Image (cartoon, rainbow, N blue to C red; front, side):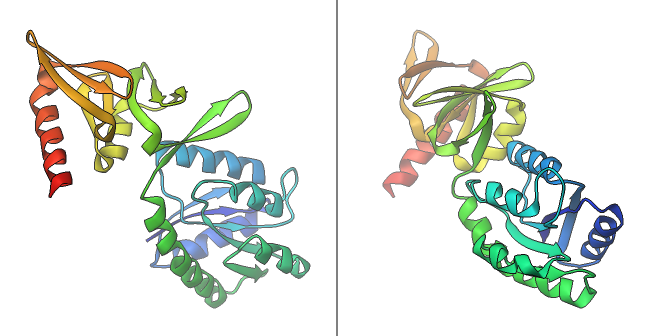
Length: 247
């Protein structure tokens, strides 16, 4: 099932496009945006919260940030959604396909033609989704720039109120997200709770130590405490992971 974003600065056209997409049984959810800037902000937020986005149906002529400009920015994402252009301007088709668009629809859009575009997008999105699942990323805002921190580079994460601080080999980054949400998002990647405020990547654990009733983990270059509540679960998971690696 596809999760899509429809972008058009003409409200009637946007509503019609969203309506037609929602009638397709292959479409799970459709979000809308009325301009390129809003669409870009929505996409960054989706990545930050772990929301899947399979494709974007995108108008070309929009004020502020055109569809082609937006497509170029989206192309810089670690796992960009697939693009389908929906426009009244057929002269931009070459540029659209240079940006690896899946399809190029001319307005007014016929339902049958839109259904074919959805089929093409679904076929293109399937392998991309499988590849993206291999290593998630978290977008971090740094002085007007967006940096994408890969999951595999994170040693551990610590809750800071409504934020989480990601600790990596090359520094730490503050992200607006709850630790519980991050735990759910990265559970399948081997991240385990070792304390009510700390989530650790088991792949980066080099030592588990019991000393004087105190349990600690060496993660990267840091030593972290394991709470009594989580000690048994942490030990069992690390032992299980070690045995699986040897088998």
